[in-house]
Every structure is written in C-alpha cells, then in structure tokens.
Length: 225
Image (tube, rainbow, N blue to C red):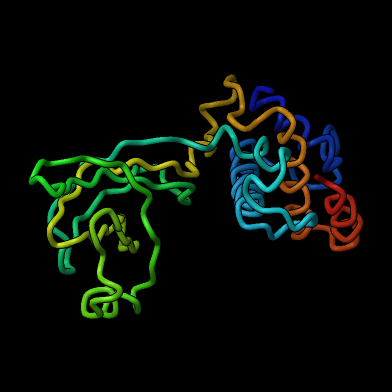
C-alpha cells in the first residue's frame, strides 16, 4: 500500500474520517503515529513481547513480519579497541538489533602459512572481559572471537597470535521510518503486516483520546498474529 492509503485506513479505523466530532489529526502527526506503531511492532516481533510469545524467526509468520527490515552489511576492520587484542567495527547508520555476526580471522597454521577463516562471534558481557583477558582457560584461542557492544561499535576480541579482518552482520534496520514526503511511495513493511501496524497506531491514539474504546481496541489488537 501507499503511505497515503495507510493514512486513510488509519482515519477509517479511528472513525475520524469526515467528522467534526474531534479535532483533525494532521497527516504529519499520523505519520509520526505510524512510525511509533511500527517501532513497537518490530520490537515485539524481535523480542517476543507479543500475544503469541514468539520472537524473531520462531515461526514463518515471525520471519515474514520482519523480512523487509533485515539487512546485511560488510564492515571493514577499524582501529585497535580499548581492550587487549581488540578491534572496533562501526555499526551501520540504520542499525537497530543484531541478527547474526561473522568475522574473518587470520591465523598461521602449524606450517606458518597464513589462513583466513570466517567464524561466528561469541557475545559476552562487559563483566566477563576480565575473565577473558586474564584466565588462561577463557582467553580467545585461534578461531575464537568474543565481542561486546560499545557506543556505535562492535568490539571484537581475538587471540593474541591472530588478527581479524572484515566483519559480516545481519541486522534489523530502522529503514521503515517514513516522512510526509513519502505519501506517494509504497510503505516499506510487508503487505500482510501493514494493517496490523495501523491497528497499533490506532490503539496508541485511542490511549490518549478515548479510554473506553482503547480497552475494546486492545482486545482486538491481541488477536493479531
């Protein structure tokens, strides 16, 4: 659907079309409400805080709900990181949540020949860094690469006798955010999800203006897949 058509659907569901019962909601405000609704929709589908309790890709429906916001990127290795044997990787500008991460690791084999392997990163917490750096049984070895998140960076920590190259990431993008200039453009979320997003936008609006209808609409919203 076009964004303009979604705005029309919003007005119909809110019963604010061609009526003077309530102040007119400008299109610019409706767009903001749709963006807020889509943010909630994506977060719920990613984290599992929804009526079905299913998170990212736990069912085919969940996979289809967010397929248009999954993006891939190759990130070149950046400067040495703050921690021992670490490097920084700048996250894409539209990054929201990580889906999968891999990295090139360069190590010498037993013959001293340099070998490059692509491996998955192991996510750790900051309070594990001391253990990883000091404990000989937990230090990264060979193809093991740990990572933490800091600011707009992924910090990759690798073995002292290896180096790292490009990082490959799949992530949830915020490319679904639209503006009033997009009225004539196709809405970027999957077709089947668009009405569900409008339902969320209507509920957010009713929460502010009509508490009685809000409870009814909440019950309807809970039936969304």
